[in-house]
Length: 305
Image 1 (cartoon, rainbow, N blue to C red):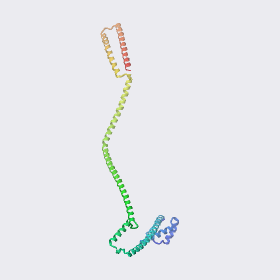
Image 2: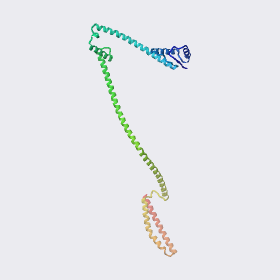
Image 3: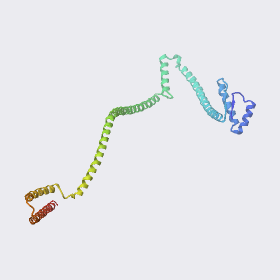
Image 4: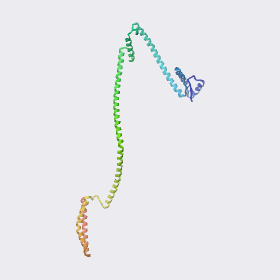
């Protein structure tokens, strides 16, 4: 529930409404304090209190502001009264000092203008150095303190300059590094297309090599199976095969006259008894040749093993 209230005196209806709302979260005393404070603040500048929305939140915020403002106003009044009292005392002291100076003939009107100017400069310097009198010791202490402050400020300034120099050096290095990285990035971006083409070529070659590998493995399996079928063993090397070929040539050379003799018998008239004898003789020669060939092969295998 909300209500719009103005800066004038609360009417009986508004007061009764506020009394009704006190049971629903509104504080009548707090509302009265807020209204009184608003009227005092706006009446001080010759204006009326503007209308505002009457809600618990607005009243709480304004009451908090009013409390803080009143506390600060009271503190400011105490300080102002103290300053007024000190000013009165300083004026009275100034009157006494002026009377004393007039009695001894050192009134400001009787002094030369350069003396008055020097005194005013001395007073301004004392005020600038925040000292209570114009004694030489006070000036020396103030100047020493000012010198210490100047030294501290110079040290801080030197430290800040060194840090600024270091930061500037880091910044320059960072800018140089950034420029280098940008150049490298541009080079890498330029190399993307050739690298992609090379990768594609290598991928194609890899696929071809994979296909060739499978083909060679299949051929190897076929050759191995064929060697197993013909009785190949690891003991049979190229040297053994060459030696066996030489023995085969030797046997062919030895059996060639026998074959020629047999061919010459083909033109003779058949005679059963002679044919049987000739066949038995050739069988014996053939068996002897096979036995000799077998012995040669066995000796060759044994020597290779």
